[in-house]
Image (tube, rainbow, N blue to C red; front, top):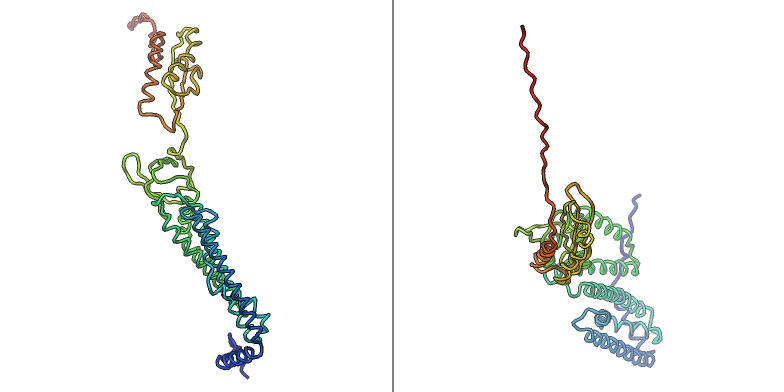
Length: 373
């Protein structure tokens, strides 16, 4: 005795079902023509109303044209409503009132399910695209944004339409457990095989969306420094101070603390010097005022200027001043240094410098050497 496995899909006589659908529809049209006429009128009103809503969405798109704002995001999603979905909504709403036969009712329900699921996927996709563009609005053209958005669009579309397909098959009564499991295992295998590539890709998307730096910014990370020339999907290219091109993995770049010197609001500079211990106390007392006059006389803000401690060679001082803009002019340090030296010379203040004192022991007479007898 042999066991025959059941077929995956039942045998369907399409010709018989088509003939049944045509005959039932013809009989229904003869017996319910008034209901069909009224339902058709209601369906036309529904279709016109939904088309008006879609036109309103198009107006919202034009209202936010050129700017990725919430009006344009919502409007673009509504504008993507398909005519087939609008028609199926109208038919689904009026099919029960018209008293449609079971075969016609099931056909309308089947088509409406397909239209609704895929239309929902299109809406979600457009909202995600709009949110991404809203977040990346104003980004530099050379940051790899076009390539990144292309990959995002592809991945989002594949995921959403795969989910929509699974939902449609599930509503049709197909067992999708094996399909879902296969997709999950395949995704894990691909992720493990290309985890390095995906790691750099995700890091690139993080750089593009979070914007820790942009093209032309001077950044420091670890012991490296350079000007950002290009942000790719796998690596970022920096131009070093000596003119060399540095190519850094995006993932490695984000693993370090990034210091963006271009985006700073101000800059500070500090001079450190020493005065000898022979400096008079009254000069030590007036020195903070002299340092303040020298710095503020050049138009900068003094953060600290005075004694910091005692050392082996003299009195330790520092003077720290702040720029008015995000950086100093090229001649700022020279002018402040010249102003400080001028005031020091005016008050006869001298800097301490390392000195050496050699102490020699006094000469002692050398005792005579006794001769042996």
